[in-house]
Length: 113
Image (cartoon, rainbow, N blue to C red; front, side, top):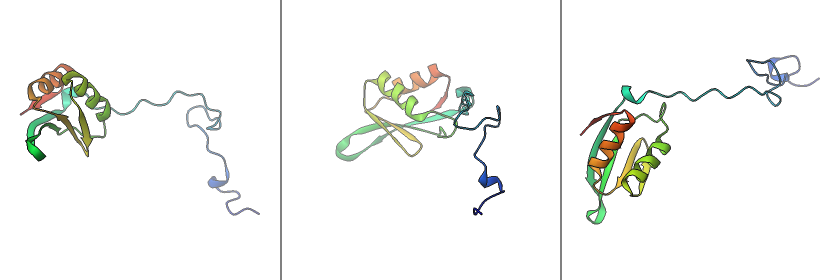
């Protein structure tokens, strides 16, 4: 007799939609939850870092409901600068406030700062 014999843990997992085994399931994955940009407000600021370097920071966008790495990539391409994602903040190298504001507004975000 096995330890979990006859319990739900003994049975292989099945798809909730088609009832096939999960390994054999051909259902498309559910799309990720996204918050529409029109319902979000991005807060922009510039900060001075070590050795006098300036950084444009975007705050106020939740990580859940957004694809922050993709948004960062779009902003970096638009500004022609490097950047990083630290916690829930997007950092773009340089004083890029106007370019970032314009790019976010074109994507549909509300912008403060």
